[in-house]
Amino acid sequence: MVFLGHSYLGSWINLGAETVNSDLKNTYGYVSVDLNGLRIDTGRTFVGLTMGDFGKSGINTAFGTGAVVGFGSILVRSGIISGFVPSFRWYSDDGMAAGEVEKLLAVAEKVMARRKVVMTEAMKSLFRWVGAEASRLEEG
Image (cartoon, rainbow, N blue to C red):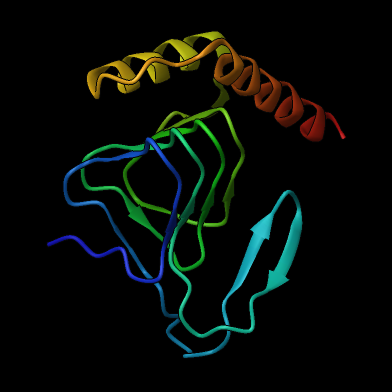
């Protein structure tokens, strides 16, 4: 069974088999989401996963209500992933580590090539820019 209710999913993502999310709090209250250290009240009762472009999850990944995953992050973790996962992160049971932008870019190119789409130089530049901006935001 797969459930991705009320989710917002970017382009070129890959969700492992049996990936699910919760989109409703047990209290039936409004869902708040975390984004770069800010807690934002959505004013909505149903909010599932938000995942940026080129995100990936492993088999049997479970996302908590209102989970947010940034651009290019790869999640292979047991247990529920909740809150905010920044862009360009490797998230496993060993913890969260910064992903190398060039390695993630190489994976993205393979993903696109599999669908016979060529990543242009402009797209590569944008990918690298997003990586630099994500690092800059974290340094604060």
